[in-house]
Amino acid sequence: MYGDGNVYRGQRSKDSVTKTVTGTLFSADQVAAIEALWADKCRTYQELMDAHAKELDRAMELMSRAENEMRYAGWTKFESDNPARNGVYKDIKEFLK
Image 1 (spheres, rainbow, N blue to C red):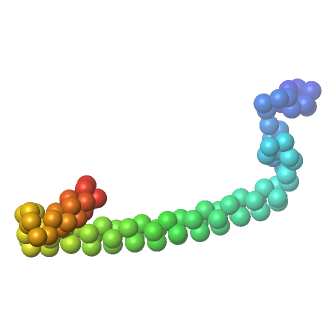
Image 2: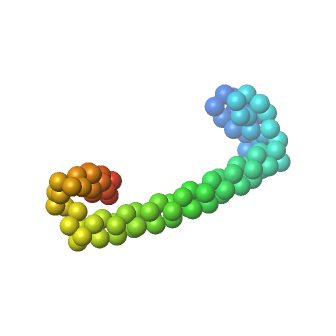
Image 3: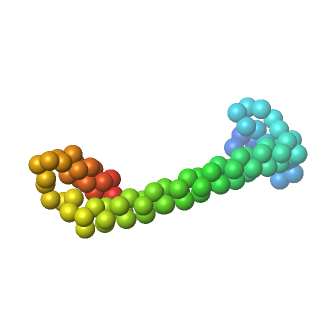
């Protein structure tokens, strides 16, 4: 702000109670309500992502245990009467990398 009391482009007035978002003027109360709404949406999204991450961790744990059991059961050895199991074992190993 200059000595004449005007606020010029790129500057903020210290007593300003409004903000502009995409050219629309909002009051401080409206801005607070918008921020609260977005905070609630972000919190909900975070809870959903946390639940998804827990499910993914559990799936990875189960796949790792299955791979371990398959290895000990001899799935790494090729058998001519059951060739598909080698492909399944290789797919699981690749997935766990």
